[in-house]
Amino acid sequence: MLRRMSEPVLPVDTARGDARHRDVRAQVFAVVPQRQAGLAKRAFWRLVLAVARFPAGLNLLRRLRGS
Image 1 (cartoon, rainbow, N blue to C red):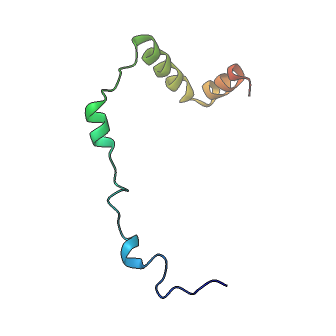
Image 2 (cartoon, rainbow, N blue to C red; image 1 turned 90 degrees about the horizontal axis):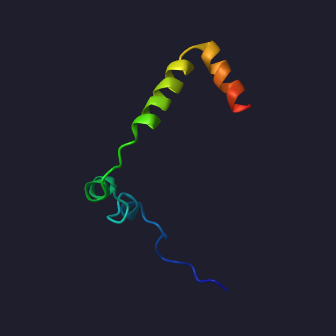
């Protein structure tokens, strides 16, 4: 038979914050440089987003995608 614990498993005081659960994105991005997208890829996405601004363009993109 299981014994009953005298204290709750997760007291509220310990659930407020933990040093292991912090946002480390700034440190990672400082060490690992971001690669810049090539000119062709940037031009392609600029064109796609410009076409997608209009309902007819969105329909065209959907038809070209096949969905």
